[in-house]
Length: 263
Image (cartoon, rainbow, N blue to C red; front, side):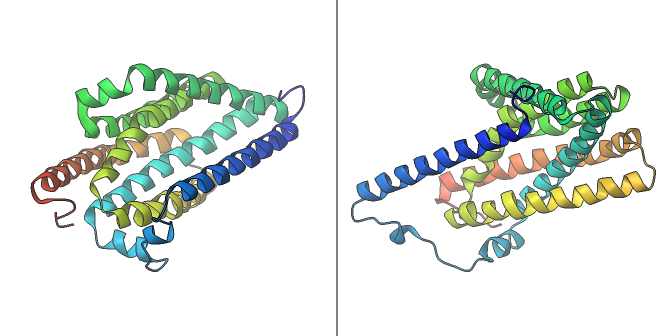
């Protein structure tokens, strides 16, 4: 479709699908409200200020660890994204061909994610634990950086990015959600919102500036790939620390009731 109809037509199709999704959400919300009886949505509101999520994060080492995890994740993903864009722009002259290439990459990601989730995710997390599942992302990131630095061609981009993103979606994201099962309701719905929007997008923007600065200084992607190794080591240690804290909180909750462990 990218080559026959053009990228603009795909953008319009995506907008229409989003519109359909919004109407489905409104229908589900209306049905939920009608079936809730005396327990209205107003009864379940938590209240508090719009800055509550930030203050909750600043008071909790566990949540600060999740912030650091997200910053490391988005920084690595953004640096890979810019290098991917440079390689593809140098290999494909027109926008339609580039769109077609990225569609192939997304198809690889979706297919691998589905296969991993059906066959691998649950037994793997049981085998290596939450920490091991989280650590799969820094490991896959090192592999992607190394591959794209050694062979900066579209085929390497497709395989490296496809595998890395499939690992993220199929293995790491479920393990990351486990980390949120041992926090309070307010932390889950306020602090999580801040981390997955403000922190994620802020880290994304800062990493873009970092990439532009490194390019201006003449630093090649090979140098960036070398520099990322110690950060990946820190990232792996953080994964194991978060998993231990999650287990401690879960054990404390079983003994004392929910959320009694100090932050």
